[in-house]
Length: 226
Ligand SMILES: [Zn+2]
Picture 1 (tube, protein in one colour):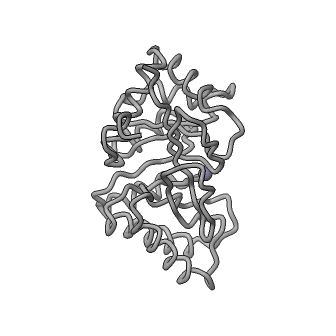
Picture 2 (cartoon, rainbow, N blue to C red):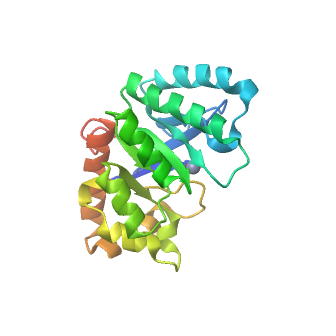
């Protein structure tokens, strides 16, 4: 039997059969209706002091819905113009919400890996933290993995830089996910590359990701429940 391919982070679900797509919702965004599961977060690119309270109310409502399986993407980004204190305040609120609602935190991070890991050491969250769109070297991967975090890989697996493929090769089997994010790349291409990198069959890879989704997101038996 063909294993379901799970995409843990997409802004463009396709609704195709045989795929489980987790649609990401940003503040105020409506679901497309093409996928049964989503994540909801306040992205650091789209924050403003004046809408923070209403944004947090929206997020609280989203977080309480059973089909919202993680809080995110939330995070810290040193390449965006959003003021750092506002990013920090929002990220902390999101991390707290992940704890309150017992759901993992899906993280957007640009040049703030050490900052986020330092916060994790202080806050000691119980919920899993997942860095999405991972495209850094093994040293950064090690820092995150050693801190108990998970990595999600996407289109960077297909580029020539080979940082993402090297990091995926290096990541323990129970600590990674796959995603398409914003990219116009078929999910099966990402799975195909990931299977080649890890030297496993597509079937084995899909089973592994299903197990990881089952453990980390607490979804029923990943493939029979879909
Ligand atoms: Zn995204």
